[in-house]
Image (cartoon, each protein chain N blue to C red):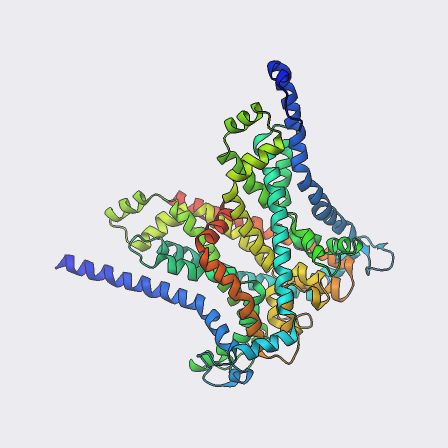
Length: 280
Length: 315
């Protein structure tokens, strides 16, 4: 009798746990679903009470309106270009420096490494105004290059790479390569890089998603709609007093879907990257 | 980086010394790109900001030294203090609940009997993948002033009056805090989950044998062992919350810099610099913000580490 009661109690708490997690998932997913609903409805649907909860047939029309308002594909391409180049540059700089910090002895090494860690606590707004004038002086204002330059600075990358190189590249391998007459750069290129490819994936995902979603700097540097990245272009959709909700959420929908598909395909890699980036 | 010839290999000592020298040069060479970029993009702007904070400058005409005037102007501006107040209130409402909900979610996601684990994990993490601009636009529609907006409709269902989400003192703050919570709670959950997974299952098994229920296990095993991870997220959340900019700016749309209900410190800084061309006071604001961030990050981190210690003492 007592045993039976116990089992009943356990299953009830199990049910409650599933209900709680179910609600959490639902609340996480709902805004995405609702964005899709709005993206397929005319703006007038917004005024209906109770609110519309099912998709309509305006998916294409609303997106057509977005295309009239902003250079959507140009902006997506601009963002892609900025993120790709920044990611490649950061991967190269970080892995090279991480390799040096992990495997070479040189005076001042520890001091320099601590300096890198300290740079991580300088908040980005402190540099915002001088960076703006720096970029402006270099003639890079309102250009994608101007957007990219500040993202090249990434102390977290060096930190992760040093960690990974010292854990996964054996000293004996480097010694052996030296005996074979390999230059240090050749060792980097043909021994270190292949071994640390997983770390490239981790850091690459962190950098790419961070730059993709960044807004303050891109918003400050870019003026001409031709040069807008997708975040700045999307923000400009709502920057009028006469707003068309269907159109706005259609823009958001089409800009978000590619990213979500990539995330769903590589979700394990994404989640482990983000955790590693912060926990290490 | 010259490769070695055969004769050199014989002379061990010489080889060793030249090898050492080569490694030294390589070392400096390989860390140089970072430090060059850091000098130009990080250190110089930070130093220039401090210099600029003592100058009066509109970006075009020559600067003039004004001593501490910029700091005085900012600190005597009621709008600045309003922005500090807004930032702290929204930071508190947006991030503090995340930590509690995040720990509970992570604890549940780690339960051994749980099915559909990956489904729950992915859906709860999904908002984090979405950009802040996208999130803010979605929420600006969910929480619009219209009586028919979803938020107001739900309030109506429960018998409440509609709220002006983008123009009222508390409406804006609540809507923006919910948005911040929604986007970040999954991120914190995943961090906590990584922490919980590093806790040995034996502890839970032993506790179960001793008759501890799940809630007691959460309180007395998970929470104390998770402390380093909690400290980490409290630190990140504090720093991030005090830098709030994109969410309110996008959420408020065209009225972002003309209204004060949800103006944050970074928005105040941005407005000074790029709307009013007052770069001196904007730089002073940046420095004051840095002090505020250091202050709260230290306090919050100390409180988080302190609470755990006290608990240990009691036991």
